[in-house]
Amino acid sequence: MTHGMTFAAGRMAARLDRRLDGTGRAVTAALVAAAAALLTLSGYFGYQLYGQHQEEQRRQDVLSAARQTAVNFTSLHYKTYKADSRNVLQGATGRFKKQFSAQTEELTELVTQNRSVSKGQVLEAGVVRADEKSARVLVVADSTVKNVSTPKGETRNYRLQLDLVQEGGRWLTSDVEFVS
Image (tube, rainbow, N blue to C red; front, side, top):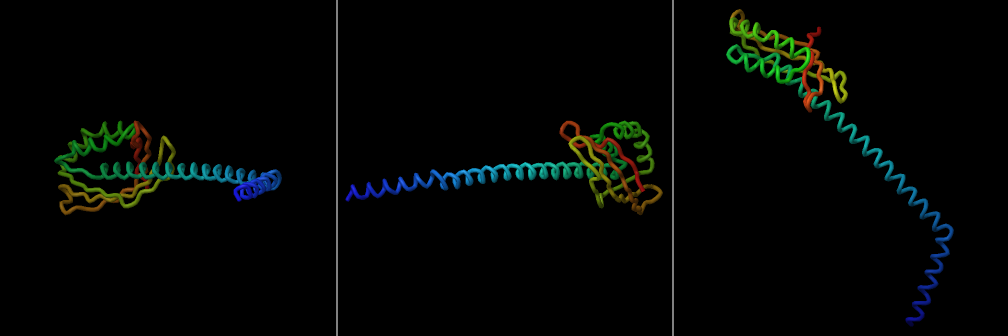
């Protein structure tokens, strides 16, 4: 009986071997090719997904930096203006930093004399363009301003175009323009 089982197993192996000589090998080759194609496609789509994730993360980082700059730029208090202006400068670089730095002393005096207080908020912000090194963002912000001449306060509307650059792993504002 053991000899009969061995004989049957041998015949089955011989049939399988003959089958793999023709059709079986073609099927195996087709399966291997399909698996390789599937791996290649999944790698390609994985890379595309990674790129989209990187782009979305960059967009969010740019928006966050632009929003913070707009809030810092439109919020001040005459008692804390030196710290407020330092906050603006920490997120600034290039032309914007030079211009704001040059005006800080004059603005400090003006803000203190007028006892100015403003609280800014970003209403909308959108990325116009962004790449790995630079970005442009449009921001709509409001600021409630109180001072000696308007003690009850008034709301001011701002439409800003901010240019940002990537420096030292951070997005910094290099230019601010008021747009209509």
